[in-house]
Amino acid sequence: MATMSSTMGSSELLSIHANDKVVSDVSTTSNGSATPLGSRKPTRSRYRHVAAAHSRPRTSCLSHDSEHAPSFLGFRNLMVIVLVVMNLRLVVENFMKYGVLICIRCHDYRKQDLILGAVLYALVPCHLFVAYIIELAAAHQAKGAIGRAKRNDVKPQDSAQVAKSFKSTWRTIAWAHAINATLSLAVTSVVVYGFIHHPLIGTVSEVHAIIVWLKICSYAFTNRDLRHALLKPDSASSLPDLYSACPYPHNITLGNLSYFWWAPTLVYQPVYPRTSSIRWLFVAKRVAECLSLSVFIWFASAQYAAPLLHNSLFKIASLDLPSILERLMKLSTISLITWLAGFFAIFQSALNALAEIMMFGDREFYTDWWNSPSVGAYWRTWNKPVYHFMRRHIYSPLVAKGWSSHAASAWVFVFSGLLHELLVGVPTHNILGVAFIGMVVQIPLIFVTLPLEKMEGISGKVLGNCIFWVSFCLVGQPLAALLYFFAWHAKYGSVSKN
Image (cartoon, rainbow, N blue to C red; front, side):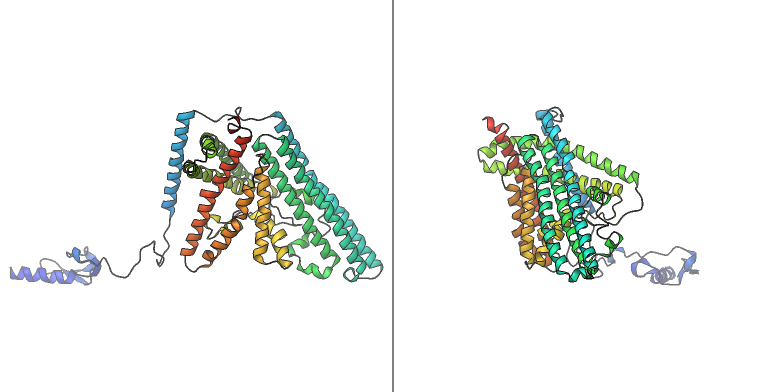
């Protein structure tokens, strides 16, 4: 017994080690013979209850001082599932109450609306070609001025006559462009407001007119600076190197303008970065996405949002504030879902398909706006085509004239508010000023959340992101939708009949 006990004790001492690893080069069998380590399985420790579970200082993975940022993929999936289930339940509830509400013939499409919408869609781009004729005349005048200066052996930049002629010509050209651009937008707005009843057809016509109006403005301002650089060669060095492939006035051609007309940008350049080929399979996928999401938006709006809006009309008419708040919160989810679907359909699918067809290289139509740490960051990242236009043609010129950055930013939002009011108020035949006020209110929100964006650490950015989402999803869009929907029915629908 003593010999066996001694043998077992030596075997145990040789096999005990940290983390269940054998530290001895040999082990002893029960009969006392030595066995090399590699010739048998290592003996595990019998003391399993003493393992060090807490061996070093560590932090919770959601803490700010965590060594590694955790992935929130699971939470994202959970949120998507919850949103789908919650809204699907309401869709089923509406189906049980009202039946199938998807109906093409039920929409109040009038023959006059379709005809006028088609005529406007065909005629509005003609203003772009009027802008081309204006710029063609201006380029001819600039080349003539340079020719006269050379015949007189005077440099264009040193010629007072050339400078005077340029200023006089620019005033004339500016007035011509202003009248042309104003007519393109004013005529469309008058026709939509007075003669196109259906809001969707009116909205498409108004969006098209605003896009063309912005393109005309960019075409005029850019060519004005290019013409100035031509007359003053010393300033030509400040032009982007990219423009040297098509210097002014070689860019004043119908082909160049036609490309700008269809290019997915609001900012005119003589030359754009281009791709080498068209991937038609890529185009087909993006078109399929756009069509699928459009059908989804139609379904969600008709089967879910429309009954909810209709049920809110008399609550608003009677100023039942608790019921209005409840409807507002219920509307916020479907408003957010349809808006996100519309964002993806336009900025990811439609614009990428158009860019591929046009071989347009710069496709940063948006960045990660959903992570915006402030309201200002959202407006800088979610709609890059509009942001580029506002910064290039409004903000930067105002700052160059001595405006402060805050004043220039405020004017950008005032200007954007006017466009939003045209975009929403004209098709619904109700100029309420809600869309305009909604944009102007962004100014104080930007100043409030700007310090949060600049704070050290993540807390300020998280708070700023929450303020952005609450102001945008819970208050902004649903409230505007309720007010314009109520105004429409107060003028044409069920509320006006009571």
